[in-house]
Length: 308
Image (cartoon, rainbow, N blue to C red; front, top):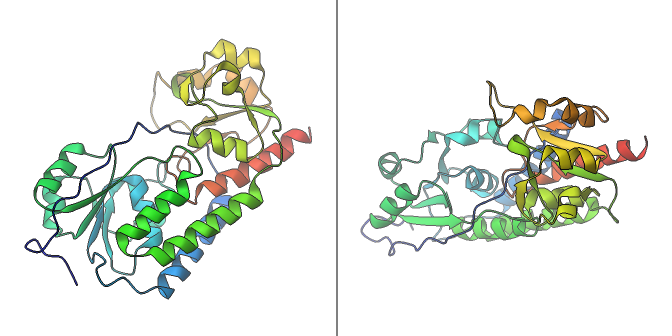
């Protein structure tokens, strides 16, 4: 059964969330393709095995980078009809290649309405004006909060499965994620490391980026300065801390004052200790199974650090 504008349930109430922290790490192409293949294989097998629920939405539009990726993993064939334009940008999306198969949208209410969706997927801070207008027009909107830790990843997967009528596929994907995470998790804290981005931004242990770092077996120096979430770490403290590893995001094209600190000779000297610490952050932005590829790459870096 497909909802129409005359039979559609009352507008959904959107949920609020606090701002998301953002990590900064790049995976090697090999790790990226292996991780993506594993995720797609699990999700694809589950999708083929589970028929869509009788009342599942038939036309789903995603207007958020993170819901784009979860929806691509879990939607039944033909169920997802559009993803956000950010999903096709490899600098921010871990599934840019997969996203190229879908029409892109720019989260504008008019264009979304003309797509005649049964369901719109949004983030808690995605185009609030668009979400509000769509809701007032009676279009159902499912709002997802950011994932602030690894334990939130299965929760977001389950929420997406319920929204799409794909509970079985979501349960399989969540179980696969938890099993792989358990297998990757380090037994004890290891070398000291720092996440260091534009304007000296770092992430503490109560953030998605911080938990990824911990899962790979590193001790986060941000916690030594009382940072649990995100915050600014002065260059002087970074240097005095003398971490074994400094992980920074790959700069965007063009010049940026915010990123100039990453070119400081002292930061470069710290990063030259180990190759591969300047990384793209596409797999760290969203709480999806793709974060496991980052844990694997960091675990490899930890092995190299400990072998020095």
